[in-house]
Amino acid sequence: MSFNSETKGRVFAPGYFLADPENCERRTRQMSASKGVSSNYGTKYIPMGTIYPANDSTAEGIIYEDVDVTNGDMPGSVVISGTIIESRLPAAIVAAAKTALTAKGFKFITEPTVTRPY
Image (tube, one colour):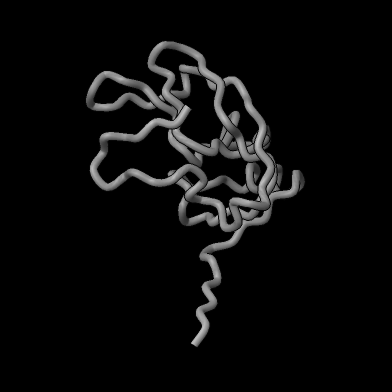
């Protein structure tokens, strides 16, 4: 379920942090409402780009799009392999999580390479 944040300047397409959205793999996982962030309007959501289930050595993937958990646990899409642009993640990824995700087939880059024809 896609959720657009009311925070000014923070509306991105799902998978904004992916360098190559067509060549990633996603799975549906249950999102815990306890991991939600409260907004100014009384809603709770888990931001896109959050490490799932936690930003530590238990990391399995990265949440593909914002998930509204205002009314409890909800299913959400989790990227389980792909190329990630680290600077586009909402929080810095810790070394243990990066190691765990790299072992699962993730590749991390700092910025995408842009090639323009002349």
